[in-house]
Length: 237
Ligand SMILES: C[S@@+](CC[C@H](N)C(=O)[O-])C[C@H]1O[C@@H](n2cnc3c(N)ncnc32)[C@H](O)[C@@H]1O
Image (cartoon, rainbow, N blue to C red; front, side):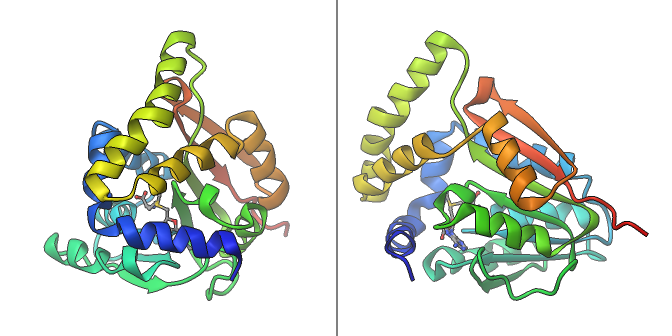
């Protein structure tokens, strides 16, 4: 395992017990609304099969399961056991059947064309080789299926954008550190966001690596986060 992967695993194992709380506080509850929006945009419906990669404590997988009902199948995978440990009880408390498994975004155990929808929320920038993970996730999507990504960006609104940058660089590590006990983890989360492509650049990467025919980027709150809706082309007959 690479140095980055080990560091990411250690960070998420450390903050796992307070991850949901910190997420809600630091995004002012917006992360929940954005996950709901991602599921709506994916077109997931009854009977479909969904894979949520880097599922963490399982929130997006749970929203998908609510959307597709008992006839559909949702699997959540993450390479950090500490995060995944919290997911099954959350699904069970809502009477939802979701399968959670250990797994690496860069080497998925599933056959080609297995899922109608594959998603990854705030995960792709943490993966050691994002291009490899995009190729791997695209592999397991059915022709005509969707790849949905939720990831951080940078706001294009001038004063607001500067305020968000200040909040992420200065306030988040202190507040996240106080709530989770790990200031370093929230420093890492800020620096990893700064280094990762977003908007048009990430659309280009998704098309190149995933071979998606169409990629639509939806900026959220002026671009502090983005949802990317990617469609895998139908096979040529
Ligand atoms: C910020 S959390 C996001 C969790 C969840 N998707 C959410 O929206 O709350 C990032 C997650 O990515 C996972 N992760 C990072 N690299 C991974 C990889 N190569 N394979 C699987 N999971 C990975 C981490 O373990 C962590 O749980």
